Length: 204
Image 1 (cartoon, helix red, strand yellow):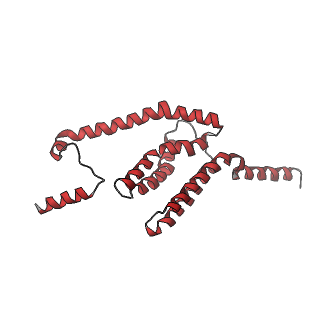
Image 2: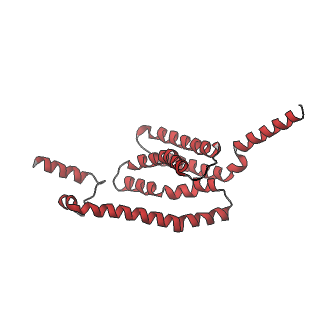
Image 3: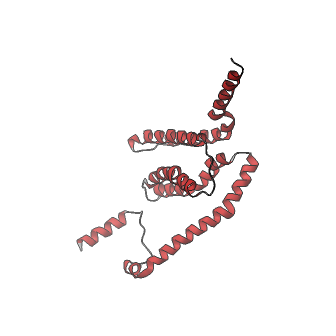
């Protein structure tokens, strides 16, 4: 009885796990299937919303703003894909008072950089032509923001001005993404390379 009371006390203190609609006996007798069906339904609904509404609206935004596909993917598409992490962090901060959102966001970024790119290249039917610049650009901003986040977490607290600094870094990233095609290092290296070839052809 003491163990049962202790387990109930822990369950009441932990808001991350709300009470289930079914009892443990009902779940063992097959009610867990309803949870699995609900998860599958949410995945299918998310796929339909992305294919039918999100991607077409993103195409319209790209056309209206005159931005490239990689820039749109790193800003608008990333914002839409990271919306679940945003709401997870909101629930963790204001409802459960837990830092579950930090691991969700950082882990999601690593997952997107490694797993998603690897799987797309592995199962692509055509040869993907990728350049080093988008990965270098995004990893640089990601590293700067992650180091800033680690520095702010030294005292296990995030103050309003620290949150403002992180938000400003994202604004700078969005502004940089708007003009990165004209000011990219890749173009400067290419111009320098072409200038060197031209001078060598002239015998200078």
